[in-house]
Length: 97
Image 1 (spheres, rainbow, N blue to C red):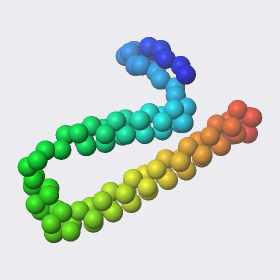
Image 2: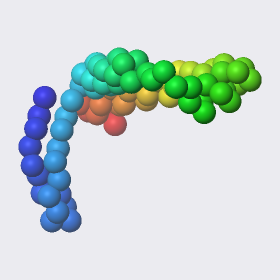
Image 3: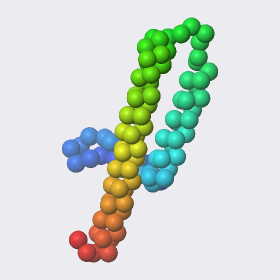
Image 4: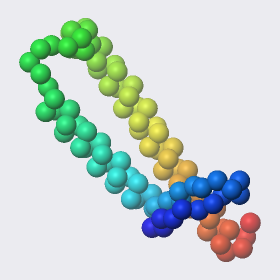
């Protein structure tokens, strides 16, 4: 893990963080779990517009399905890009460009 303040080619300051993908995924999972836990405690006794419109009409299942498919696709894309980048980095290190 590398933290440091650097000056880029344009002369502006930038903050450089080099974290492994596993650490980033763990951080995202932790933040998501913390937010979901907080959302459960924020439930009130009064029904909101979400309950009145989405749950009663059955549209919430469609929304959840679309969001789940989108997140699964995004996760798969990130995983594949990570594998391709790792392979390219290994080829560059070995001198076969």
